[in-house]
Amino acid sequence: QVQLVESGGGLVQPGGSLRLSCAASGDILSINDMGWYRQAPGKEREMVAGITSRGNTNYADSVKGRFTISRDNAKNTVYLQMNSLKPEDTAAYYCNAKGWATWGTALNAWGRGTLVTVSS
Image: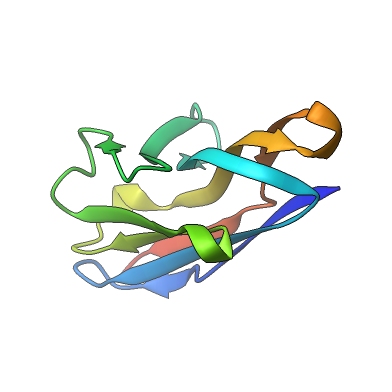
């Protein structure tokens, strides 16, 4: 009933920038928290950035100062502006939304992911 669709991934050179978007749709009552996670093959999934409905943000130390998370509550969309990209940023990026769906069901939805490759 609820799905998240990421977009904006691709191939970029080190030092370049990408902007990821994730739009949530479906039977959504409210979305409280949204975030971005990433996972590279053979590595653990890690939280990259999160944002609350009030706009409070947090970042992984590895991306702090380079990435900026934002959201458009009216569109149920979260963004991740990624600057000064490094090869170690290469991963599949997934967005996550937590809140409430219809029927009082807790919402914890994941997108299918978008691949970011940083290579020269």
